[in-house]
Length: 165
Image (cartoon, rainbow, N blue to C red; front, side, top):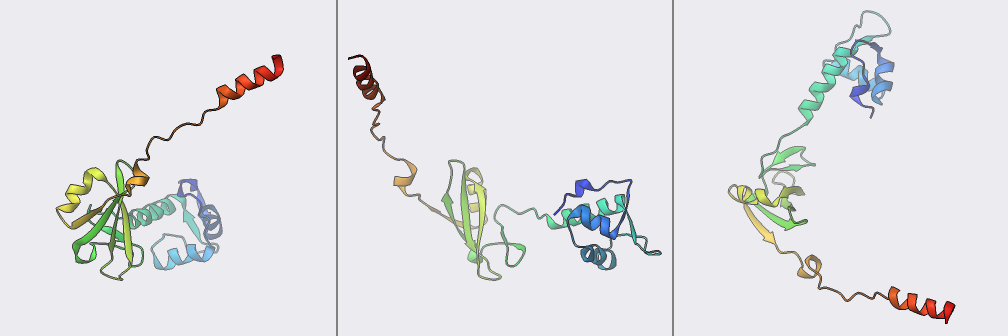
């Protein structure tokens, strides 16, 4: 999809031009005008859309699509809504030193829902739901110091002897 920032505020667009600028089909723009409240001058053909109206419309769509989640809510892609985990239970697995993955079951559709959370937020999440912390495999977290097989010094000496010796 084209960027809404490509829309010029003081320009007047036809349906086709706005669709092309946004990387959308012209029927999508027509549907936005007819059903979703995009303001256009429909008195003549082609329909004309002010750039400022188009930018405002896109800004409202973007603001409406963004959802601020509470710490203990996870977004379910199936339900398309923030959900509190089924049974108020989730699992946490450390991924990096500062973050991990919170995994739970959606109460609406039963699918697995995930969310990356900071380790520092874990106690605040635990105040709302029960969280089981899964321990990472110690073999994966901290490998023992392996001996280095550095043969470069030996090879350099052997090469010097072969050339000069």
